[in-house]
Image (cartoon, rainbow, N blue to C red; front, side, top):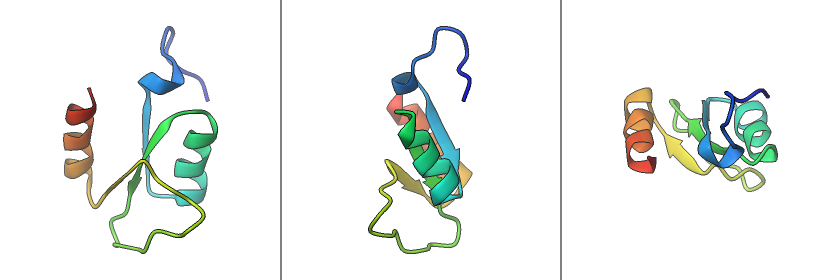
Length: 67
């Protein structure tokens, strides 16, 4: 994953709907991940998203709080 010049992994957050690709992939790189769980699926025991949001509106509100 390529970061904008000067950004460090702890300054980035990734939003995605795939636990295995988006959440796990981001976390392997030291990036916080928001799981976009539109369908309300249960959280598996082996993957731990930093945040869980049901829609992009809620995810965007999480971004404002995180800044």
